[in-house]
Length: 468
Image (cartoon, rainbow, N blue to C red; front, side):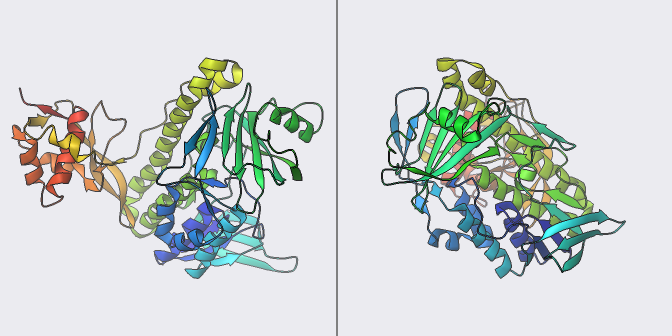
């Protein structure tokens, strides 16, 4: 059992602390602010809920005052349209309550929470971290820890190892209350900005304007500049009786990645390590994903130190890969607006992103059985361009090294396809076997129907090719 100190109780910090407690470690969690507190990130992607299952926080979140996204009003590179939320809609949440629920789950799992509390001093001697914490004006707590996790959120400061992966962007936002506020989220592209409107469970409406950080500066008050920008959109067109609550605020929204996110005795999680472009609306999901990955990494460093180098590589490369993929996706999403409107704001965001470091293994969903039937009788062999590389990935509660498939048609090496480890399947491939024979040979690991789907996926990408 190790002593873990976590600084910051946002979604990443609370989820990491909860997971480390589940793994049998003693965890202390320090949070400066009392909860509930106001935070951006109120629109959550549907992929978040399965992550909450890992620590057991999902039931409490779903039972709280959340709204499902039935539809989104979109004006992005063309005429306005209403897009349905789909079978797995996103969530609109009160971030203050959402964060409180995640922190309560950490408490329930035995995490010691110091809140509100302020870190006064941190140092490391040869064997441990020493953290001095001010709990109130008259009390101090002196913690000793084997491992230090930092989850203090975004910072515009350029720390060692940190690099920006997108243009400097600022989010200006304000909350409104009124009788005629929109009831669905709205996203809109403007001339030199883009807009996001979020109806919250308490009946308020958050209007956000994403602008180049330089443009947000200038004469006049922040409110005047915000209202000028907001008039360039239709976000508040139907809000004639709306009243602004609490004034206009600003928040850095620049994407970045910290290459120094993990060492043998410390780790950065959530926005402290990786911030993605806000257009994806998946920042909270990515923060919790990083917390889950960090827990496996730290558990390996503490309990299987011989595998420490692989664990460090796994965490650093998985975040680097996420940074690269999100940057490319964002650039592709901004591209049609840049073509239509032009201008420095859009062209900067539509530019091809910088290539990031090596990617982590992907878990790719299997294709449909309909695709599989088309290749049942083909006689197949492994492409000469395919090979296998060692790649660290999560297995259970630890990071282990797996053999991964590498091929020019793959974005990155792949260790798993769906829930199945791919290399052992391909190493049993006999050249000239049909897809159906492959499925039968793999039947001890997966059902024949799934085996055909795996074969179809490999054929479509040129990894399995028809024998000459």
